[in-house]
Length: 220
Image (cartoon, rainbow, N blue to C red; front, side, top):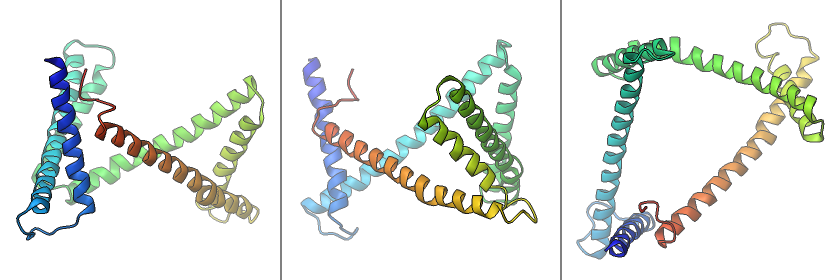
């Protein structure tokens, strides 16, 4: 019985994946003639709509779980319950304003520009300082080429970011600014593309293993 259930789930996953994948290789319009290809095209659209609906339901369940966890902290007066109360309050205020005025209204954009952007900028600045301190602590414990390269790159990026925000900066900073731009546009961009390529290859491999029923994340 258990093996039969596994085979059913595997067949469903493999069939669904093949239908969606085939729909991307065979381009048909909505007025395609009724037939095998037309049926595949219709099933692909139906499955994609189901996926969007399930993703929306998953988002709602995640928000409900978030509210439940923080409401429990408020009810039990756990440590840090004030932050939970602030989160729930701002969540409902933002939700109500978004539903009433719309996501593109001036009120919602004002909240985003006055609260969200400053918080993200503060977190980014804190991350830069934290990484620099972590690099110096790493050098105290282990001094090698990788640690020195990390500290040198971090300091170079921090110094090179200064001329763009400091008025009448010294011309000597232009060298650091050029090196910083090269690191950001060449070295960092190349590394990021390499990581993205690795992620893409890993995703393709994982998808193929699911399509071939080698991996069964839907089973126990």
